[in-house]
Amino acid sequence: QVQLVESGGGLVQAGVSLTLSCSTSGGSLSGLYMAWFRQAPGKERDFVAAASRGGTVTTYGDSVKGRFTITRDNAKNTVFLQMNSLNLEDTAVYYCAASTRITVGSLPTDYEYWGQGTQVTVSS
Image 1 (tube, rainbow, N blue to C red):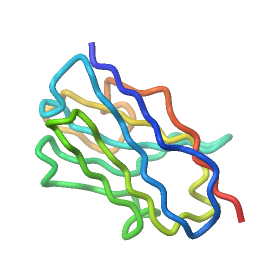
Image 2: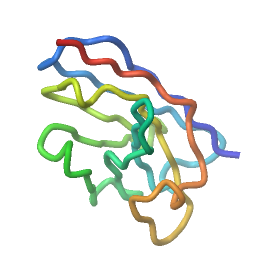
Image 3: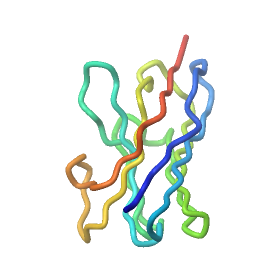
């Protein structure tokens, strides 16, 4: 059973950077397609970023393109989300997600495994 644990969230001021980490266990990270989603209060869970198994192909949600970067270290079973130029609209619970499927998209239903989430709050 794959388990995901996020860390690195917190309260930050607008304009700064923050890096989230997702540690995986119960399976080889190299076999998993990994993604980050976020959910703000009262809103749906939105796609943030995803990385292919080797990390060579990455995709991003429109609202974070150019500001966020997803990377993965398969040897350390860890996925990262570097977030730059944070703004108030980035406030949300951020979730790490994993999929064993061959074809993976940007919908939450594409992912079988989820972490518990980490809160990111951006203040003005």
